[in-house]
Image (cartoon, rainbow, N blue to C red; front, side):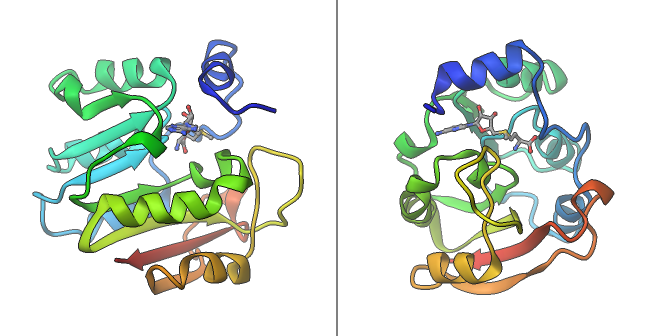
Length: 193
Ligand SMILES: C[S@@+](CC[C@H](N)C(=O)[O-])C[C@H]1O[C@@H](n2cnc3c(N)ncnc32)[C@H](O)[C@@H]1O
């Protein structure tokens, strides 16, 4: 299966959005709520309908950037936040982003949507995109990785092995405030460059 732009555009066009929870998830909301510096330059890759993007924006974070392969979800985010500059809503491939200056990157069901063969590239690209001291934070699924997906799973041990050589692992643990359908199926993490 080729998880390319056409694949994701078709998922949106046919409203086949199993991942879409319709609002900002509790773990991300609570993480965002304790961030004090509203000037942080934040990236949300593979944001989909971007509920956390809207939540961030309405919480006073204006330096938010989104990249998604698919055009349809970006149009939806623009409709929800008309004031956000179009230049902050990038339609393109995360792996082609060239920035090196994000303070924070938020992860939710983007990692699991990628072909697992790209996991090492994901780690390296995230590292490149962050400033020194910058953080990659969010949620990773905790169920066995099989050939079936997306979503593709993984375990705490696999994620530790994957991220540890590159990032400092500040937090990687069972999420205690997951939404009910994801209870005991996801890990909350904060990795630092
Ligand atoms: C499973 S959805 C998750 C959407 C959102 N994070 C959420 O939780 O509702 C994965 C998203 O990643 C996007 N995507 C997949 N591969 C991508 C890539 N290489 N670069 C940028 N976006 C990508 C898809 O278009 C889709 O919007």
